[in-house]
Length: 338
Image (cartoon, rainbow, N blue to C red; front, side):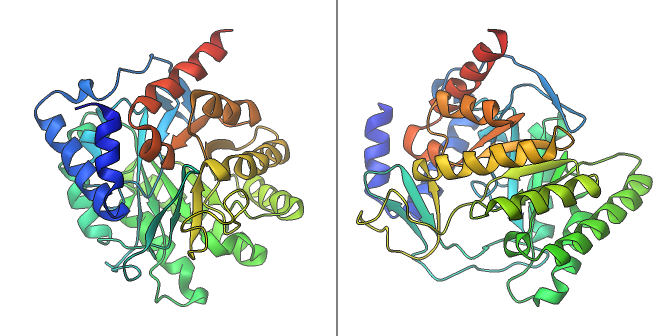
């Protein structure tokens, strides 16, 4: 069945239902051994980032496989790495449905999922059964706090997450959301995270890098302040960026007025601007993963040009399909050889 027809059928469904069916379909195709029919293989383009050797620089962003149930099938599409989560210490249902919306005609998605998570124990059980992880495939785990954990106790949840996933993760991403703007709190959190990383390095006999995911809705002063703290605390990586609360470029379109974070093509310019300013402020001392609005190979390369070493896809997969993975990897590989 042609990709365009499959997409048309899926787009006739509620987005969350469509996502679940698509993931189940990819699982089935992978078990049948024909995942290669969905997309051509990306070029080999190894890159070393955060002390990890990635087979190619195109990864899956957190949120697409929140509970780590589809790692093998997604990896078979050609990703250089997979990031799962955000996972919370305890299971939580997230917000009431509907909570995921396509923004008509804009290649954008609004989500107010509310951090739905199966909890860290179940995610680790899912990951333990993934052959990709057992064969040494690169899996990042994005950890967050439970919705009912008070802000003053948020660091405790992050530390629980880091401790629980440390042995299974290739790297750990910290989804700090609103903590981006509480700079004093951020400083203390980063200090505690680095101390925990040191303790767990000794315990497990391996060093697992930490990457902090930052918001899209930051001004220049906030970007500089965050960069200063990442450098001072010797954090391994930054992921730029999360979704945006702004509605630039989608005003008046169907579902644009829904509450939630906007991702997809309209996020690209804002996210890439933040990435570029962050890269200049970090001065090469902290690796950057670029994410936000990539819907073409040229978009992926633009993130690299702005200062990223790796990129991640999310909404672009919904609108472009698995072929975007190889397209993005090929664009980056071609530019690197030029």
